[in-house]
Length: 259
Image 1 (cartoon, rainbow, N blue to C red):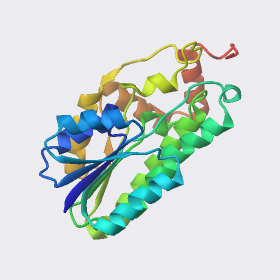
Image 2 (image 1 turned 45 degrees about the vertical axis):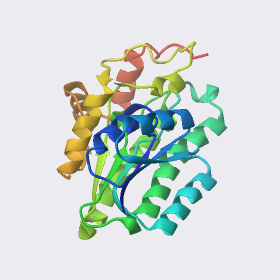
Image 3 (image 1 turned 120 degrees about the vertical axis):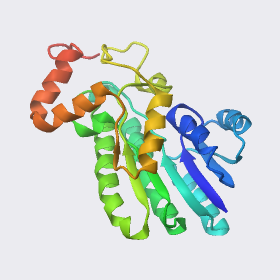
Image 4 (image 1 turned 180 degrees about the vertical axis):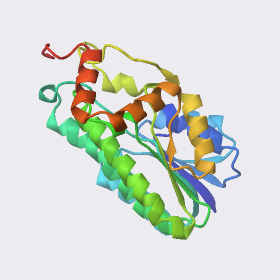
């Protein structure tokens, strides 16, 4: 049985990726999301059979659930798309430690756990797609945990790709810039005093279409858009301290407290 596993499949870029994989002639798409209603909507949209998992990936029991299903059914995993994740933008003093640790669990722990569980069921030609961010290339004040988790994903994906070459499995790390999704509903508080300027806001479908093409071509990185690529280039040549100062100035934060 050929399947794809997609986390964050109920909305945003995970949902868009599921729509693209609907043409892959898979037996099933294992769709994972917090929201069961979103999964119902996705199932209605797709021709491929959808196996729905309404799970919180910050919980170990959710990871165990998927692992047990894999060990029981022993499918041929053609695609693993780790698109689930969330961010919180605010002063570190205003973000609860519980929220920060939850970010780490979803953005890092879940990806590593699901990848480790999936690789034994992958064959030559299988693909892993991990969603990082342009933020993964730089430290980001007032989004420090989020950016750090994305840096982990970036480094992890790069190394993992070379480890799995001998098995014929490719890893593509997708690094979106500002992209219009439901992400901001959780990341930015209603009384937001941090993020004041979005240099650009890309279309989710276009980001995912490029990610899909890049993964088919076994590219290690997928970065959509001129502005996104320009920023990544600049973060490679500028000192990290200067990058932080530019970010603070852009958001008008240098001399202001964030309440």
